[in-house]
Length: 147
Image 1 (cartoon, helix red, strand yellow):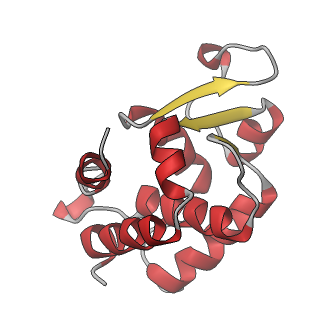
Image 2: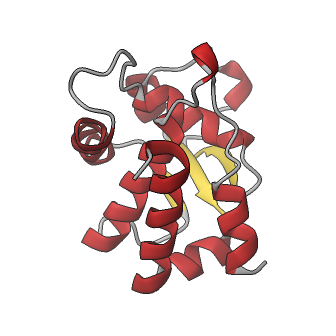
Image 3: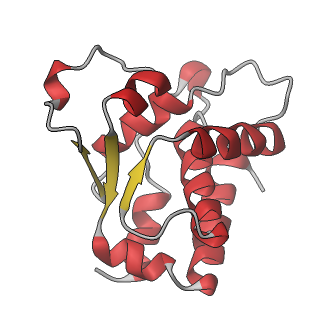
């Protein structure tokens, strides 16, 4: 799939719309994953819920949504919701079944059950390029954060 196709998917994320406004949870999560690729924390398409991801998500939430946002920074819920996007699948690396998890799982539960969000290999390979990461960041910020 082309970068243009992935960019189109990024601007059309399935998102909650309370009061008609799109929530930025998934966009901030994806920005956090891109940051983790930049920092060398993510080296494969399999992304686990980790304390590092949670920390980066919280920092990004404060930067993009603001400390005074009426929305809560629910990284676990955003991570779990990625399974609805065409470029991502979920799996448990502990051998368990996703269906056996409490719904919606918390970040702690996702870590405990070793749940991984698995990005399309093509998308992940594209994200290995710095310019592509910048384009993806810009698209996510424009579409969901208003930057």
